[in-house]
Length: 375
Image (tube, rainbow, N blue to C red):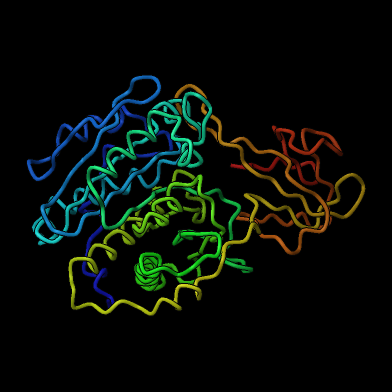
């Protein structure tokens, strides 16, 4: 698609009334109320704790797309990007005649309120496709069966641990065309999903080269994408990852917006040629090679060592805090840090101690008796 996205000014579309990591139903309901008549709002069902599960429908075109976000309650970046993209849809474009888009912007409002992956019953909704035990999944399947989409978009966040392949590049955005069976057959619908992902990757590579990853395609019938793929409907998994010091993921939401823009640009223009399916496998598979902080060349526990620190996300009085915890020590030369500190062979104390247990919260970090900020 060339470099057409360069013509788009993202700042025009960024929804200013939603930000940060803690996004709950109360955050998006005012946004729903201010949508123009281009969009139809409906309550499709209710969560296990009786919170409404809204849908937003746009367009009247033949090609139908079903998108859902925050089925994991603590994965809010794509929800923000969706409302950015809705602002774009509200401008003059011809998409409404080409596609019909139905969005469930928050499938797990109970988990969002608690800032947990699971719903109110402690169930991972993305592992409930077979059992259909939870009201949120029952609602999604009812929408799926009624809407009969031609494409499903499953929107998520991923942890900061992922690299784009065996490289020092963090996976800022990742994709997956889920398998339709145990044999990982490239069915017609899965091949179409691969082509669309490759096209989005080609657009993103112009902006964040080397920072796009691909998830393992092991088949899991408990997952929504795998299930819909096995039912003959193309499905794409989006994963918003980590970029620099963007722990609130305000920059990454822009990259998800770019991915969505490029996807819908292709779907609306039948003259654009899709990439070859095989190009999908040129996207490097994600590896777990990152920590939030790595301290190199430390004298720790009276030995020369590397120290890895990983943040635990914790909801504290309505705000998401990032709690540093000791993740690993030793020779970590094959790992990378989103932030790297060189201790220069000086003594490192954690919580004023020469040694603490793994997974302990770190309240104080000193290098050669100098306090170092971790956030």
